[in-house]
Image: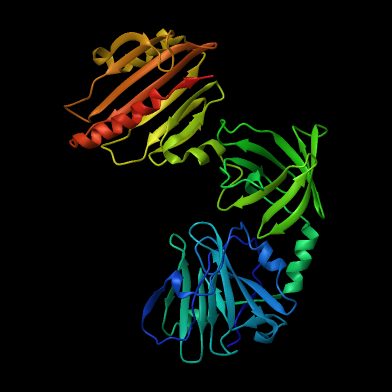
Length: 433
């Protein structure tokens, strides 16, 4: 039967496959990375450089063969054919993808058995086969391992979409039209002559025209910028339009890495960092690592927390640090700034809900030496849910700043201690500008 056709266009943030398609039916094999002697690692955020360097007789396509990303397939003119309606198909191709470390890699080659069964995709699977076999190939993204399911999956293949290939000239035209060295993403920035640069300074691009700089070692401090990009030149305006302007003369653009020289003679490198969203990127937390993540509040305070153990959300003037590790129940720290009360009244109001079990006291507020803190403690409910509460407040700006710990204890003392220490660690790390 004539198969349905679709041209697969899109950005190239991909995982990839390895190996061939002509093995015996009835087995499943995991193909390890070291089985691909031609594998080449390249520090690149996308496949733009691969497309730009394709020879004149090359064809390329994107293949839906992983959960979240397409793969890039590359073949030559003599291996493509018209499968109908002018769409060019193929039965074999080299496959490129991004490995588990976010690096672009050539994983290997896939090859089918003839023009009657061109490469096709459906629901994250590449179908590759011949007249008497049809294998399924997909990517396990967490490990960057290609898994081949060998068999006769012809019923599923009949519902798949043929992978349509485009001439390399199409990719070259697109790249030249863009004329952009920098695209949406996060880039390391360091001096070209630096040995083992620290990789703590970043240029963050929202798109090809705007972004900001960020110093991960200094609270993420930086400047917003706008830029224009022309052939051989990228012009940055720092601090906004009409402000400080610096021209970068580009000397090298390879695998997404930009090397150039600013007007003052500084020769620098911009290296893309894969897998980071410029909308949510936090330079300080990226440099510190999950266990030393920092939350900086607009009201002038900050705390450290373990991002692998806490989920942080904001809602209506409150910040919630919710413990996500193993625990007996809900455990969280809530930070609230209110103008409805000063600190002492805010603590009394909070304790009212607990009646006689609430105990009030005064002591220095965390993160300070000479600021009065008003405290309320509710002991563990040993006869019921195991819930407990501790809160503290201080007068702050026009109102009060309150930190409330809500926890639960179970029968596992070791787990209880670990949770309590994690919650207390947030409070103990509190600092003010």
